[in-house]
Length: 126
Length: 126
DNA sequence: AAAACTGTCAACCAAATGGTTTAATAATTC
DNA sequence: GAATTATTAAACCATTTGGTTGACAGTTTT
Image 1 (cartoon, rainbow over the protein chains, first blue to last red):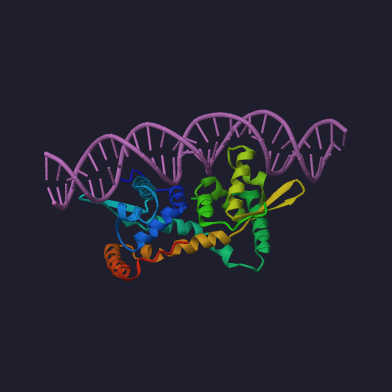
Image 2: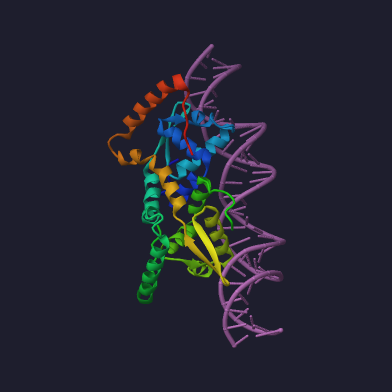
């Protein structure tokens, strides 16, 4: 796989939305593993595991090198960082726990509405 | 919706794996919105937007209160924090960028293999 | 060269996803 | 009470998902 295109946030979050794949990443955090080693902990066919690894590769979370008959996978942490960056945008929200989030939202709402009257609500996902 | 069950990481990451839903969260970060307001930025039927909001609710990322005929949504940041916690497990990997990750993985691999001879590789996802 | 090992591919399947459209429900306004 | 507004529900559709099985292709062992 020659990673035809940069992985998107869609790809990354989708890859993470499956417990099998998350578990595979955890194992890869402990060191390189080939497909067989990644497959064995799960009651699942070899082919199924291979597909999961493919999803991780598409998300840019895993890189593979072929060595003899073994396909060796390595964790590629970059996209996890990207995902984390996206999440941390909200850090302010979850860290201001009980100290009424409601008031914050209302205040920011007013600010947003006032602002949007002048410049039309810029959105800034991705 | 009376959130029958605690949202899982699966739910959360799945909810985040769609650009429409991520954009909705961004809007909600600026303040409460009803379904209609959440729907309008997208060229998409009302019903479709409603379904997206449902997915966000299931993931625990949004809470709704009904006020008259309007369903008002509020950002619920807790699960984002949970997702972030999961990701930060890997923080060490992405922060040690160029300074050969390879060596780190090999070292940790050796450690893991040695350890597993004695205690059989504890896994700790979720 | 035959057997075993590691992995992919193709075909298939059931279930879920993301969207549509056309009702139906519930609150508000005329 | 009839029309309008805000939203869900239900039926449908195409595509994707996560899984299976069986055949195939390299690589290593015997």
